[in-house]
Image 1 (cartoon, rainbow, N blue to C red):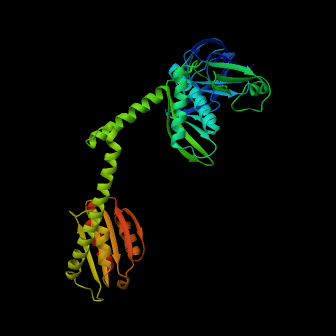
Image 2 (cartoon, one colour; image 1 turned 135 degrees about the vertical axis):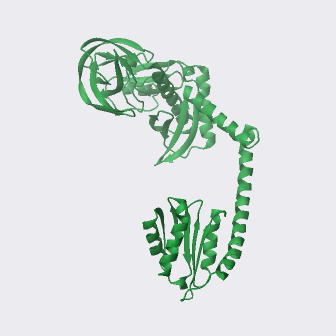
Image 3 (spheres, rainbow, N blue to C red; image 1 turned 90 degrees about the vertical axis):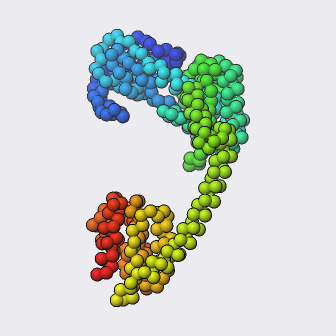
Amino acid sequence: MATHRLYYDDSFLQNFSARVVDCGPVEPFADASGTQPAWGVVLDATAFYPSSGGQPNDFGRLGTARVLDVRDDGDEIVHIVDQEISLGAVEGCVDWGRRFDHMQQHTGQHLLSAMLQERFGLPTVSFHLGSELCTIDVRGPEPSEDALRGAQRAANAIVFADRPVHVRYGTADQLARDGVRKQVDREGILRAIEIEGVDLQPCGGTHVKTTGQIGLVLIRRCTKIRQDWRVEFACGGRAERIATEAYQLLRAIGERLSCAPEEAPVAIEKASAERDSSFKSLRSTLQQLAEARAKLMIASTVPTNHAVRVVAEVLREENPELLLPLATELARSEKVVALLVHELTGQLVFAQSAEAGKDLSSTLKQVLAAIPGKGCGTRDFVRAKLNDPTQCPAALALATRLLGD
């Protein structure tokens, strides 16, 4: 028995009466809260929208049962619920907050797609209504920032004009003659959504009655996705929330940078330039320090019988960025092995001149086998980080002993 789809003619229907014609156990339903027993219910008529065409399903209740999912099974709509329902009369209630949000997003998508195609020659090839953001994939050249802003302004102008939104029915040929935006190759009577004077598009989804109910269309960004361009957007309550959060973030950044919100981009650019300058200065200073300190460390280290100097040291107060230039500078000297660890961070760097003839990769493996951590490298240079920084002195002592064997 085909289910009468009440939402086709009245997307605003929240409460309805129907008859349960079938109810039976189905596969357990899994969601974020876990897995639970489930039943599949078929009604003679329903206001619940099933997942289809990029729009997620409705939630709500059938009697005392919670509707977990709604699925389109050909002519029938199957409601997945959390308890068995007796055959016969039942009252249904659609989760209106979720439904209206989906209506705002879906009608907003029709409007935005129409503007992108009409004004910028970018047809929509797919649509997804997500839990936070919506996306449409458009085909053609990369949409410029001006094109995206232009499409957004044009869409919102029609929102503010509060144009009527109608449900129409007709064959594919009839809709084609009336200027449908995207033709479909299907037989029989098709349902279409018309934004008066703006767009006509075959669609089985739920929609608002006027463009003013969309609230606002807000484009977030555009990214490359395979051969197409993915436009992220939000409408209505979502757009209001995103815009508010974005301004609050901008204001917080301005307060952090001691400037007005609108001055934040310039302040960030200035702070970034100052950071880069400071980094270059720090790197130069660390290199000079590494050169001077390397000379002192080599001079104070007694060579072994093979004339190899093993310079081993635990760095405590020093900047951890000193490890690499200091080890590199030590390894520039002939027959020197540098074993350096940083006790606060657990970082470890071993380096040697080629003439030293040790195998630091093998040494590191033995150290990490005894003292847990992660690292790798070559025969002449290795880096690692210990899981427990307090084990740095022990790691250094072990490495020194291994190289002395």
